[in-house]
Length: 129
Image (cartoon, rainbow, N blue to C red; front, side, top):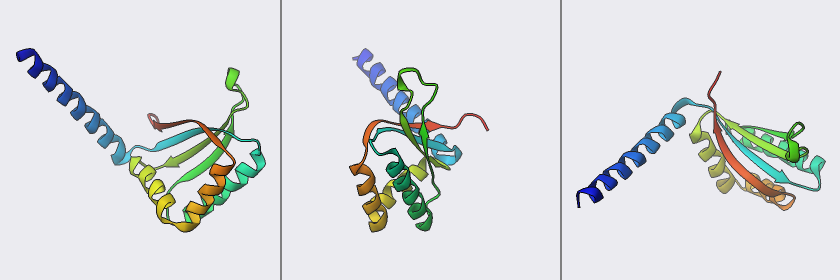
């Protein structure tokens, strides 16, 4: 019984630590969402992402989008990567909320999703300034 209580206490401590660390990130640390995609129409994809950037700006969402091509990346050379840079973790939620609630942004995302396949999707927090 005592071992079970110790395990449960350790699990709660781990969850608390994770929540606390995510809260710290959310408060004031810039975050980038990094999405690796496959597309057969890179110029068209870049155009649609730039259109999305304009719509997000018009909606007041503080996000900066960039499309990158991997160069010195070994087997991943040539991969297309999109970054969504926001001031904090709450910014990612604001982008997602806008995609769901703004009809123009939702329509643009539908166009983007039609010409890409997501290979990976990750969040990165800034460590240096």
